[in-house]
Image 1 (spheres, helix red, strand yellow):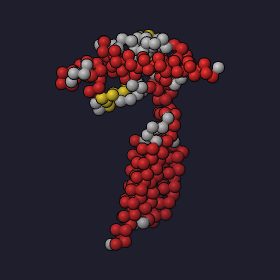
Image 2 (cartoon, helix red, strand yellow; image 1 turned 90 degrees about the horizontal axis):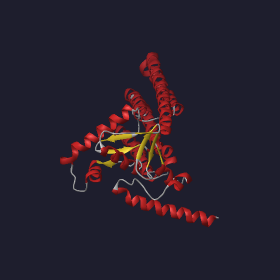
Image 3 (cartoon, rainbow, N blue to C red; image 1 turned 180 degrees about the horizontal axis):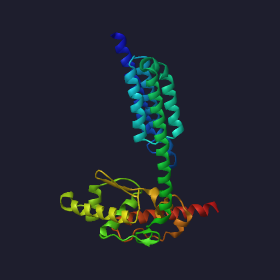
Image 4 (cartoon, rainbow, N blue to C red; image 1 turned 90 degrees about the vertical axis):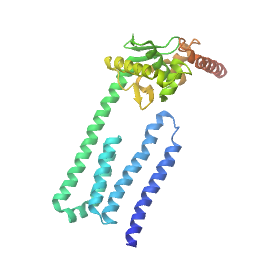
Length: 297
């Protein structure tokens, strides 16, 4: 009994150490540069997945629970496939090592048919990972093509273009809502903030909530009719745009693009009062860049 409790405590300890490390690591890489964020922020996913594979082996050999071990192995594989994006070869390594270590006991407990089923399950998971990666690559390619067609011009009046044609919404404030989300550069904006921006500080959801919902429907309908996807993103009471899905002079300016800097003439989304402070900020940034260039010369 005591030995069983010790083994269970070790199992809990493995999860605790892995979970604690993942939590601390996630906090450290929270504000890393965008170019490095994908690689750095997926490391915790790999750690948790491979820790779960280790737990499967632990169940098999230490706790003496082969059925639980195989169940953990299958659940880990399929949940990881559903929730995360793994390079197929890395995923295959995890599958192969785990099933290879467990194979002798799978054979002794479940005979040859059980071993064949476990190998077949691993093959299915690997094939699914290949299929998912293929779909992801197609989506990335479509997104890149869309980025060349979808453009936001923010210097002067805000204008949203697709294939060099102005996107026209049926509601005037739909354009302003998207303008504000473009200005937020991918950050999520909650309902309360949007209501305040669009209708003033005194606006509340009980009075203007239906109006906001109508704008959301209008935006979705218009973008879908143009087959623009993965750009306008709605979550529970939060809204944002995907900056990677659009060309924007404002984003290029922030990155230090020379064409964007020279194209700025002191006006930023001029039709919206909430953009005035940003126009002043960009103007100061332009002056600093100009002074820096003169110093270098």
